Length: 159
Ligand code: THU
Image 1 (tube, rainbow, N blue to C red):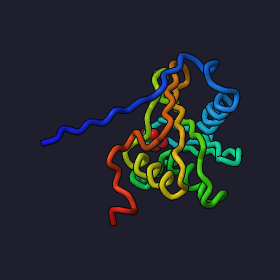
Image 2 (cartoon, helix red, strand yellow):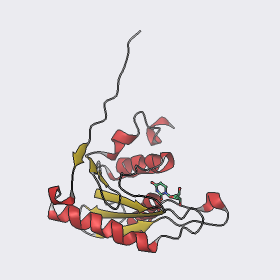
Image 3 (cartoon, protein in one colour):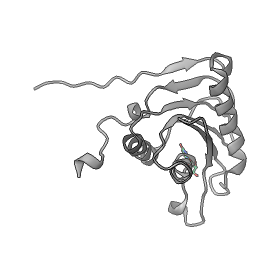
Image 4 (cartoon, rainbow, N blue to C red):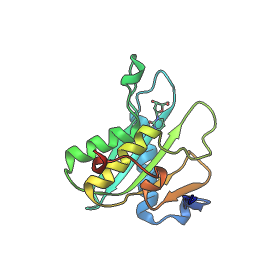
């Protein structure tokens, strides 16, 4: 028997002043994307913004539906926009933020389905993407590789 372990490493920043100017602007863009959220059912607004490797910016927000499972998270909205506007181009960095009805001072991480989609987006574009996660206030979490959120991911090579 051989025990195996995973270690997930991320950076904890106390404020946006610790981010580069480009990353702080990306987080601000994600915050702005909250305004495009359609979330009358959960009242939980999520905004995302990505900087493509070319420097182009893409935004996404969660889009809900009266048929609840038809709703889509901000992250997958964004991935669809990115793949459509910039086919094959990797995302360098993705910022995700949110505003619920309560406090918003702890980062949220992508849901399981989004982790799967992020994993395949990285695989198909050939580059790990950085993640910047923050609420309205509070600490910022930075992951250098979104794949760290889904160890042992199922992928195209498994089919
Ligand atoms: N949601 C996202 O858009 N991204 C996440 O990372 C977590 C959840 C959305 C889905 C739904 O519209 C609402 O937040 C509540 O789950």
